Image 1 (cartoon, chains in turn orange, blue):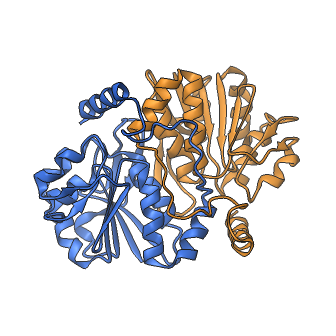
Image 2 (image 1 turned 90 degrees about the vertical axis):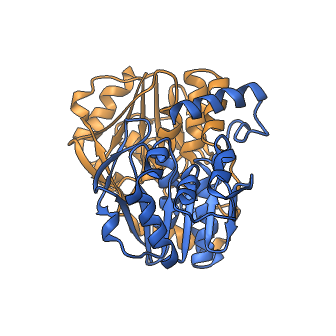
Image 3 (image 1 turned 180 degrees about the horizontal axis):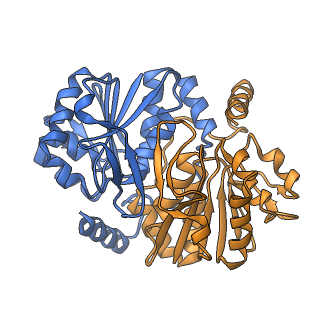
Length: 210
Length: 210
């Protein structure tokens, strides 16, 4: 089972590493970190660099693709080598997934036209630019596409996807392996739970990064 | 505020990247991924490589150190260059933190003697080898040391630590930024929630990796 993470400069690390930590533990999983140009790829903070071992052009098909989000998605969405690869590989996948603003990249590749999708709460309103129907849920499954909300939601998405790819017990075992028994010390993880001024401040931060 | 992640071969990616995604967003944070030998460091799955930009020997002090766990912790715990650095830097930190079996590395560095600590549930029973008192909680704060349970618990730990390093509102804003509003599709994230046969199977998997 070949699982590809197509990286690009200024992606958000946890968008990819959360699902990676789940999906890489599936029996028979072969994980590939790839990019238009293979080599070091630096994340949005500028302080973490991950190696993309493979060129996207060298990957003709795969079982699962997981597209991370991040402020670099604007440039990636205008890179025909990136979106063209997504468009070409999507018909051959078992599942096409995104986390955070990664759904905007699926949109830029023409994959979400007319379909419900989610994204980071601060950018979800841009989904209709790509013909997608904003659906404010943590994960949105539609056919063989699954989109997840912001950054940390990729872990929830990947566990649900793991069950689809194998079975529930396998996914539950991975949850136990990674001790994903969340106990956040605060309860401000979504815009409907956080105070309105905080929501507006963080929205401005997110937009400033892009 | 200098925050160092001391990596080693076969660490578990999410142990580091979860806390990184939180702590790197603190105002004034300067994150450093380091290792005994700087350069590419491959994680436990063998499919993800992260660059350690700095040699541990070149870091004389820092505000925060976050030690990840992973099956490579056994070798790292026997590497005097690694544990010696931990022991030398700890007296100078504001906070010394670990995730998962990273607490065994704090133990190997002599930092946990007589102190309560947690770790991945499958290896927590080895904490007394280092004089630590196993404490089965998601995060254990003792003085300026905080240990977290398995893999995903590092996100919970880092949010609590973020509040200690700054203030509660800053930490809550980061939680909103990374949309950490967990909605796991299953409820098997800890050994007291999962069925006993699953616990024993996963325990064997964890031990086989080490």
